[in-house]
Length: 89
Image 1 (spheres, rainbow, N blue to C red):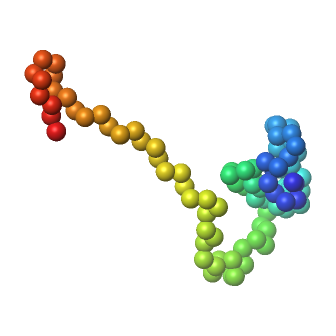
Image 2 (cartoon, helix red, strand yellow; image 1 turned 90 degrees about the horizontal axis):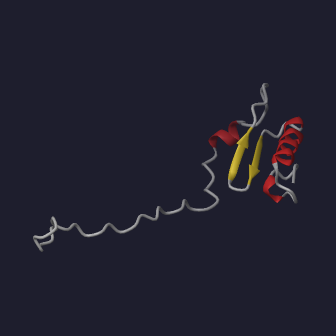
Image 3 (spheres, rainbow, N blue to C red; image 1 turned 90 degrees about the vertical axis):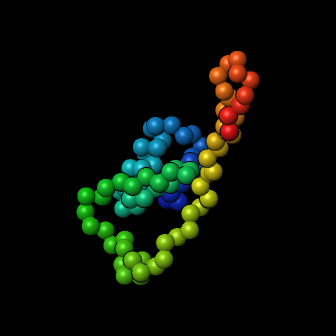
């Protein structure tokens, strides 16, 4: 999984395994690493030939999955003060 980049595929996913995978990829100058839906970028402290003209001119990639819709509960109807029996709109 270190070379492929998705550390979520590790058999054991703990802090030591994540740090080892990030270190391995950093030493290979792979500064971007997926961990499931999370993208981790490690500062290489040097210029890397990652973005040429073809990458800069390319349209942005589509997201992997659509963003989750916010599940907001339906608001309760407003009621008038106790004892009046009328409800407000």
